[in-house]
Amino acid sequence: MKSFVKMICAAVLLSVIASGCSKEDETPMIQESFKQYKSAILNQDGFTAYYYVDSHTKAYYDDMLDKVMNASEYETKNMSLGSKVIVTMARHSISANTLRGMNGESFFIYAVENGWIGEESVSRLEIAVSNVDKNFAKTHIVDANGEAPFGFTFRKEDKTWRIDLTSMLPMTEMALEEQIKEIGIDEETFIRATLTQASGFQPDSSIWEPVNL
Image (cartoon, rainbow, N blue to C red; front, side, top):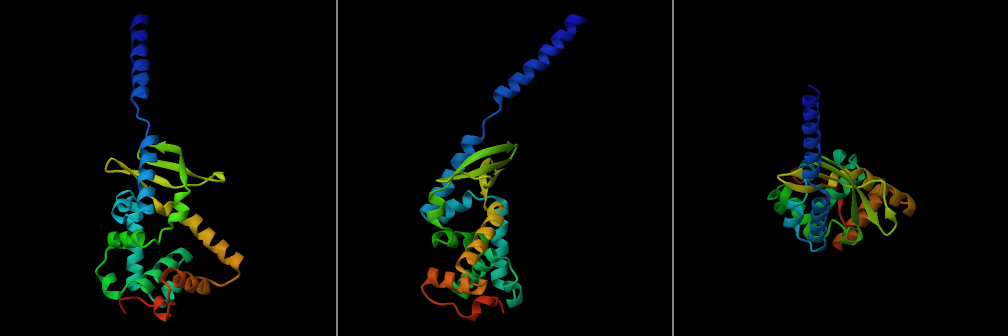
C-alpha cells in the first residue's frame, strides 16, 4: 500500500514538474508585439499598428468615431479632455465626406498616419512585463527616468499579444490636466491651441458640432 501511495505521489510530482517545464514564457512575445507596435507608430504605418492593438482599443476608436459623427455640442463639451481633443481634432482636420466613409479601423489608421499618436514620446518608451495571467498581461513603462509604477496592459487575441491603449487613458487624462494647470489656461483655449498647432489653421465653432447634423 505504501509503495502504491509513493507511486501516486511520484506521478503527481512529475506531472507538476513537466507542466512547469513546458510552460512557455510569454514575456519575449509581449516585448516583440510592443516593438512591432512602436515601429509602426514611428513609421506612421497605420495598418500594422492596428494589427497590434487589442479589441478594447478597436472598440474605443469605434466609439470615438461615433462621437465625432453624432455627439451634440453639449455632449462634446462634457467629454473627458482626451476624448474632447480626439473628437474636435477629427472634426477640424478631416472633411465631413471623408469621415462619413470611415469606420473605427480607418479612423485609427488615419490617426497613426497623420501623427496624432506622438512619435517622440513613443520612441523613448520601453516596457517591463510585470505579470502574465493566461491571456492577460500587465507591464510597466520604462523610460529615461526609470521604471514607472504603471503601464499598458496586453491581451492575447488570435494567438498574438496586442496592446490595450485604453489602459493608459487615466494617466493620459491626468497628464493633460496637469499640462493645462501649468500653462494656466482653460480647456477650450488649450484645445484650440492644440488644433491650430497640429493643422496650421485655427478651428471655428464647428468643432463642437456633430458631423451628422
